[in-house]
Image 1 (cartoon, rainbow, N blue to C red):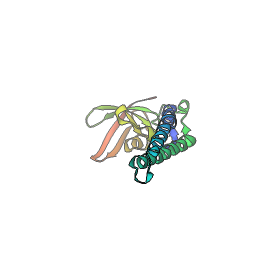
Image 2: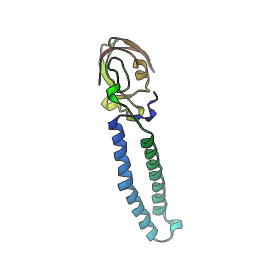
Image 3: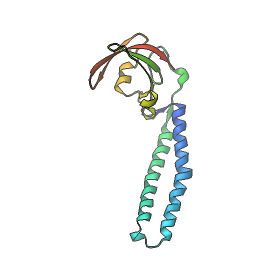
Image 4: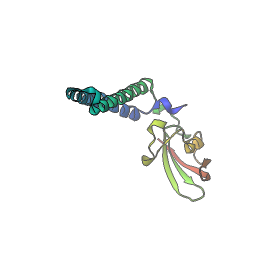
Length: 157
């Protein structure tokens, strides 16, 4: 499954909050800036007006894109996911077979990836090497520095 249109409920809710902020706070603010700049007179040499109009264009583009993403979003039904294999939304604890160090990642849709919180894109090389694997399986994953081997120690949600 391509992760581009798939979202967790949490991820979709974040987009809706951002859209609401843009529509109810940012849009009126830019409209006020344009009105204030317009009141200053000659629009042909008014840099404030030009900047505000450009910001408005970028804002409207962002609003349009967000509305489109939300309209076409597909929610992932977490209750139907299989915990015996590594899938999207799986939390997987890996052991590097060479160094013995462990790391835990959650595989998420591309648009929800956040390495700082241990959420990696299901489209990343590591995820692709893990998808479909079961507890105890070893995965060889090509990384820029060569090939790393991980053993799957734990699979959870």
